[in-house]
Length: 172
Length: 160
Image (tube, rainbow over all chains, first blue to last red; front, side, top):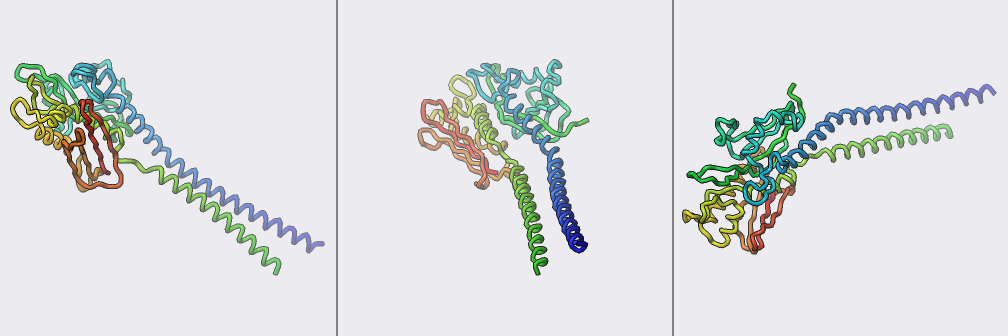
């Protein structure tokens, strides 16, 4: 009787140890999975911010504040009115209108000369919104059009530029 | 002997559970890494580039003194119309587009862009063609038809 009871106890112990081992294995796997998921959260947040910036950059060129509308003949898509943007740059009413993103327009193949009222249009970079987000940028090609004075005549002049919107790291 | 067999069976069972958990983990890891690949060039970039390039004002003026954009130049080049200063519109189209392409898509040794290709045709006749770098397996492209009355088509591909 005693021998049988001891044997049963051994069996129960064996099963208990087995259950503990299997539970430990699953707990370890769960911890590993959770750790992996949590480490990806920061990456996911950055990816969401990038998507937001992408949405903004794709809509911005055709928004009323930027688009050429009918100022250069027929209605154009992906056309930014440079004169309008320069006026917008100095309008304090639009401070923070596009959130924390930096928004700038860079003429392709040009220098880093920033546009101000004093040097416009002999400049290459228009910084429209100076938000807190720096770091990475997403961009979209646009036609940057303005009315130019050529030998006393007003002519339409369009250049290829890149509209850039920042996302990610906040600068203070 | 029976006891030894039972112990062996339990060991095999435990091994199977470990193998199962390992396979699940591997599948999970594979999915996590395969989804995280980011594309260097997005389709909207290629499309917006073609649209913006078409609106670029060249140095060629038409008979009324207006600067012709690339879209007008394509049509003028096909019809063999010259600029007001007798410059060849096809030459202006070539030089303008080559500069825009070179400045917009930098193909360098360590650059993410490996190459690009642009082909413009009107009624099946080639008006402009440019190719730089290598044609890799991964690319993003844009096709744009022009409302010129003729069947004009622009095909652009950026390789990365």
